[in-house]
Image 1 (cartoon, rainbow, N blue to C red):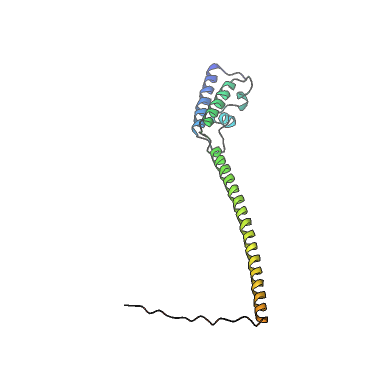
Image 2: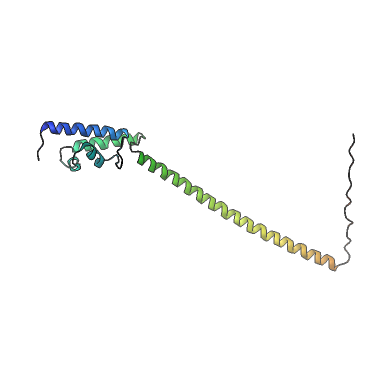
Amino acid sequence: MRISAAQRTENENRIRAAMDRLLRGEIPPGGKCDIKTLAAEAAVDRTAFYGTRPYAHLRIEFERRLNAKRAAGEVPDPREAQVARLKTENLKLRERLTQSAQTIDELTDFRTQALARLAAQHEEIVHLRGTAAAANHVTRLPAARTTTIGTCS
């Protein structure tokens, strides 16, 4: 079905208005900042944006403006920004998890070594006490006297 020049101009104006809204971040519920949503918002068939169809130049303009905004660090679609933020946060949390697992492994190794050393020292003390008890040439020292120091006033 052919459309008149006036209808085509009206459609282009609706497309440009929808394009501006989407690029400002006014994304409708369930939509994205893409050609499908642009076509739905402008009430134009999506296929009219591809190939040699009448609005292919507007698709190119929309994609150029969208890429320029992205290159400038602006993300018109809040879901895209949220996905990017969550991916970054996920990566940081994975790094922290890896670091925590490494620290736990190091501390577990340290604990194992410390317990082994304590057990070896205990065995040595038990052995030395047994040796000392068997040989009667060890003189025991008297118990330490506790003295209290008076305070001067």
